[in-house]
Length: 343
Image (cartoon, rainbow, N blue to C red):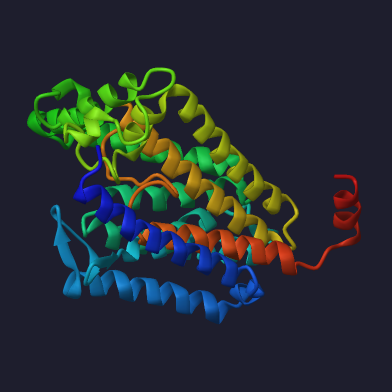
């Protein structure tokens, strides 16, 4: 059941995967300890801001969002690069302030850095990438050493403000739209149609799946964007429950390895960077699978290494290359050497 569309996606994805592997191999050989330098971090942050601003002038509008640059047959999405940059910025910020990290102001200052990129992405509008950016910030803040009392205080303020806004700031029709967005299956003939078809695809895979290339929901076009936003549903239909378990095991091994590198990081910067990357992967997987199963709103989140597209693939391989480099070039302390010898 292959067609010209499948061949087009396959050829382009092979190119992106090849480039991604090359990026990983090259970056894993570079000593990335220069990322700790303030000038480097500031330059990366300003460059990310520049790209996100430039997309409003030179970017193409696709499905109502102006979020990418067109390069002929390929497209580049700056928001993917911004996700990696915010991890580097936050790792640097909390690494420098680990002695005074308990102060409440660090939540707001770090939030300001992430908030600049978050706002620019929201204006595109790209809710999915903005949510990923917020998830990375929240994950790094949680493990940075900031007092849990301060985190609870901030969450309480946000919850109270949301409660007041919901009850006194929104009209009934606005609430109805939000409810439908949060629960797409409540309107399967309207905005929830895509999510409904995705749930059907996931369930129709059964235990062993229908076979590679024989997923009827995707190949017969009942399932839209089966190569990107709903790749998990397409995968589950063709590979079945056992294939999904295998996929989750592979993702678990990847994230486990990243957290292992975080444990033996040379400094807090490396540890926080690794945690940020792990958080980014986990957020992408959780939201993508959730929206494919009708449990979360459809926000256009890719599934790492599976969804069609080059920008997210290059950033994912780049992040793993940097992590590999950090582990390769780190200076081991005597305690770290002893710990490794017992592994």
